[in-house]
Amino acid sequence: MAEQTRAPTESRTLPNAVRFRTAALVAIAVAVGLILWLALRDTGSGNAKAVAAADLQKLAASVGHPVFWLGQVDGDTNELTRKSDGSIIIRYLPPGVRTRGSRGP
Figure (cartoon, one colour):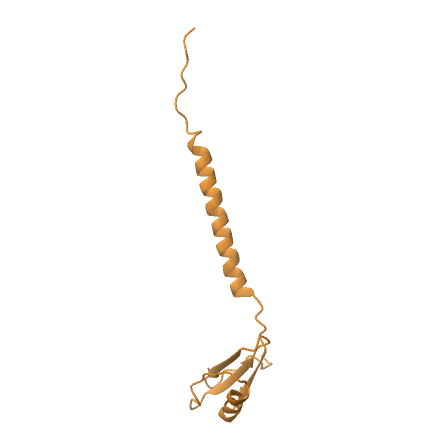
């Protein structure tokens, strides 16, 4: 009987391609999950309120760590947010912009 030889097929490369595609899909899924977690996590938003420059100076003296801010900016409102993790955020709001703690339309 004559020996039959098989033509080379892509069966040997198929498992490598499948592994690569699976690994790429897992990497993409992990990256998307990380981005969504960072964007949507609850960071203990705290309560935002408008404060005067003197209030920020008193706060800086009372918390026991540095609080960095630029000082009063003419026409802007200082918004103070104290988060549950102890972090402090100061934003400068131009005229007409409400604080995050404001209610209304």
